[in-house]
Length: 501
Image (cartoon, rainbow, N blue to C red):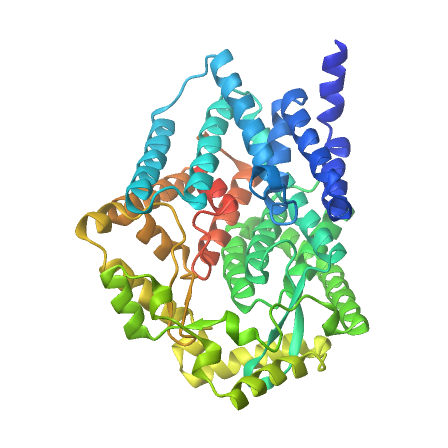
């Protein structure tokens, strides 16, 4: 073996590559120069490592996007990896004269058509470029992976690396104290939510998918794997995301049905991981209690906070939407709609909440809040405003011209109106977002693609079997359920598990 061959073999080992990425992610905030070191490492991975190792590194970085900014490429270190990996994959496909299947052409055509519609409707956007770049990479991955005899093994490695990335996100979240305090409305109490490298509800959905993948895959080192499962479970609890945990619970029911032959093994794993999860949750709670809630990033809390919030009435929103008027023209500052006494009372309530650290009972308070919302019968309150968002998103879709109802408006997460908050917000439903973005035709094609992938246990066009097939299917179920409560239809993870089918 040549020296270059030895170097590739060493870099391809998990005990070298992934720890290096993990360490850089943790140390990234210490000095700006580390951004260039990380970029150089990612380019070296794509140039020197075996292809599976480069794919593992890319999947690992799914979680690192928000905490690894890189100004030269518009704010994301992942762009470096995407560009370098895209070149590597394109060269591999051309040099090895790999065959393209009809499904690859169909996926590429769908992407080009969606971006063309978006370009015609509202011009070039960052979301559209990201969508095209991500799916373009997945098309190249499909072609390159199918040519490998070890493709199922590589797919399994990508799934395991996805979970390693989830663990890294948990570590980065704790190391950088990326928590956010949230008011509980009438309870006038606050608690710190773990958010990893994402918003807490996003973190909960992705952690849920990672847990189910880990439950399905065969374990290589039982005690280490048990520790991974417990850490992910504890982090999931610490998000206090009712929607995320509900989606995880429903996906877990599907898991138990699918894994009924190995039910005993599954229950043993869960039972052994529970103490670890509770220990992580207790450590998080103790850490918050000792430091005090005021130590954590809480968002906009200041005397002039209402100057940065704009309210809009529903009839004004509808009028502006139907007449193509800028929504800001019919919006009013929150500070202009309330009296000085109400404004000061609101600020005092927010500030006072920081003095009430109820971390130990936060989960119970959250459950109590959920029960009260269920008994109230108020759908908007029960769904934290999502019901009103769903209704308005359908209204927005109904207001589109016929041709846009058929082909959509392009792959973007468009804001809609949230009635209970009198503000614009994301729809918090990936399926409605997909309908709005791709239209009836594109949405139908997307659903058919997902059904095809699910029924055939397909990943990159490869038919998977055993634990790997189950892991992919469970991740898809978790993300499909999570998509009912979050706008993530153009998120990299969401696209990866469905468009790689």
